[in-house]
Image (cartoon, rainbow, N blue to C red; front, side, top):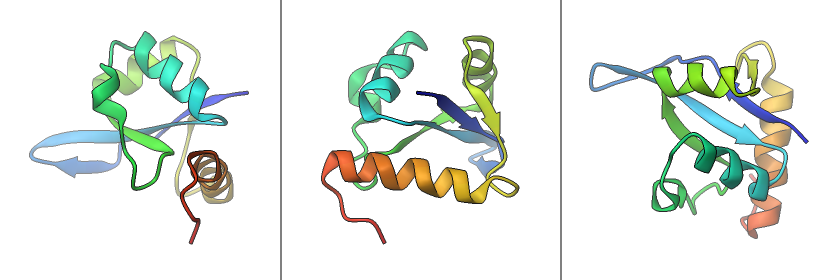
Length: 94
């Protein structure tokens, strides 16, 4: 099982954001909790698979062992992780 964090490529309201993802939802929730994210901050029912984190939090995630991936170079891996977590959450994949 692995936790992934992608490149901080999104710019929104002047801040860079990245996605935190994991092979299982339980692992994602546990890791996000370790980062200090309150549970209510990651109730993303639309995907059930990834949560937005700031670029600073992305750096902390990497320091805690998250694997940095590129959503552009590792697109197949990103989609597989998200699809797996969506299945676990009972959300249909596209």
